Image (tube, rainbow, N blue to C red; front, side, top):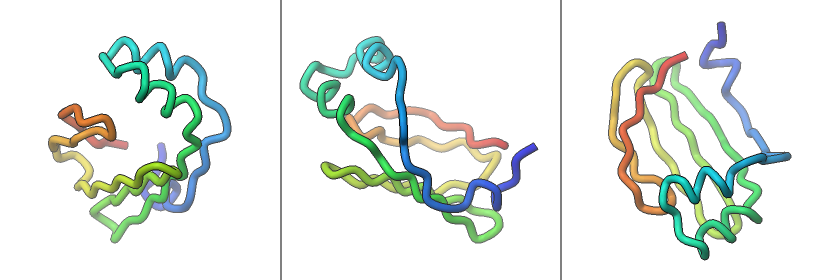
Length: 89
């Protein structure tokens, strides 16, 4: 089982498969899908032991959210959609 500390650090996307199909399925328009296809985001994960902060950086945009494991919250995705998130390990 993973722990929060095992996730802490900088993670770099190396390869992505099926992302365009996923974005199309959830209703992302062509222009944003094209940008998403070329984006190679870095994900920086930090924690104070209880709260988890995830910052995603691309050349076009940086997003960040913090959460408490086990507590649901609403997040606005990079393309503006509202989603319910349930963070658990």
